[in-house]
Image: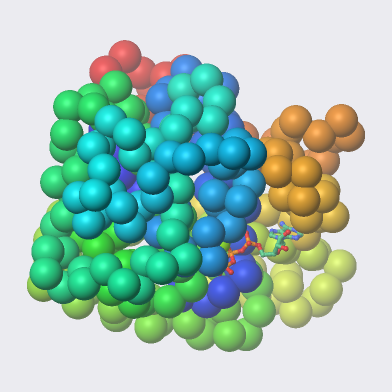
Length: 258
Ligand SMILES: Nc1ncnc2c1ncn2[C@@H]1O[C@H](COP(=O)(O)OP(=O)(O)OP(=O)(O)O)[C@@H](O)[C@H]1O
Ligand SMILES: [Mg+2]
């Protein structure tokens, strides 16, 4: 099992969008994915939670008010969700920063290949618990001034978290989202990011495309829309790159046997 935090302390850059589409690409490739909504806005939960579902949310799970077996719902074949909670701030995280890690190591999740944690747009206590549980951090940003400047703050904070709580936490890379090459500033920012970040930057970025808000409104990954968006191929390439970076691909575009 690999646990991946999908994060940025900046809001609205596309964390939830990437989580939804990455999860779909991974299950298409035969992996079992567990989604965890660690954002008290609960956007991921709004997309996936079946109407009338009564699965306890992450707050109940963290508080031990439900069994681990009851705390996730299968929202599609091989895709599970631990629903978010708008009251998550009620949990005193500092009592046990390793709590999520302990829960993921339960045998209930032994078939899960990837846990994708959709982070809140800040570095609050819930986010710290997410980073403490994670093997990898996948940062999403947009090609805007504040998005780029915020990266420094993210890197500093992640270094502190590594030192204090999770020495093996690894930055998997940075995906740039909402790219519109018709804007001169965007091309310049992509060049600047690439020269500063080098290989940390994923080689595929995501276009700014109306298919994304349309698909989220329909509660679906973009690949399942009836029209073809170029972001479908981009999400696929980002997934391949992610798998390759984690050593899952054999160089021929096939998933290596584990
Ligand atoms: N590539 C894209 N092209 C066009 N719109 C996009 C793209 N990616 C995301 N969006 C839109 O941007 C908005 C924010 O996306 P999303 O909710 O995924 O960001 P987020 O980082 O999870 O936000 P938050 O910080 O609030 O959790 C949504 O309305 C979404 O439809
Ligand atoms: Mg979000």
